[in-house]
Image 1 (cartoon, rainbow, N blue to C red):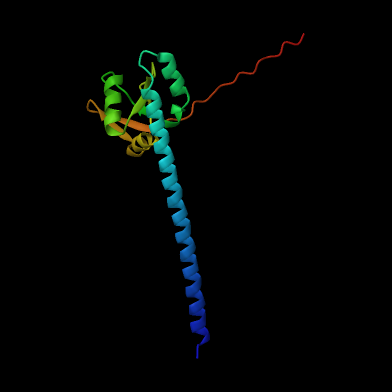
Image 2: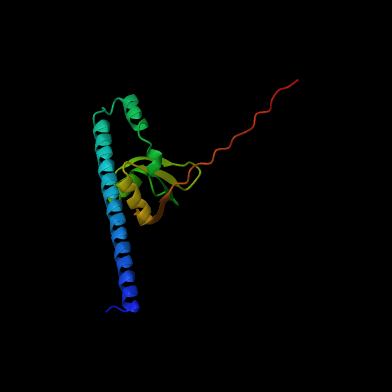
Length: 160
């Protein structure tokens, strides 16, 4: 004969099992979604590499068109503070060796910083998660670039 307390324990245990199964199902869906996303990103990266490789280096217009199809600003990082000892070549080499392929590097005149655009989300996330890099013995911060602020000026209407 079952007591009221043992029935409550049984019902509680069943509820916990159902909750556990629901959590496992959600986790499996998340893992599946992540795997699909990784596959999609790797296919896009291979397609980008093939498109870029098929363009000759002498044909700058075609290279610009291929790059224009992909938004590199999404993988844009701030690097700084720079000193006079750090040049684009050494910075790019260190970034690529540490994190992955770099598309472009923009030094900002008058400021002690640069912006690096990575080719892949993996390289970008590696750089952001590391947060720093050493170039020529100088430790530089590597952070997610902030979106530029646009200043819109209101035009005065010329009513006479």
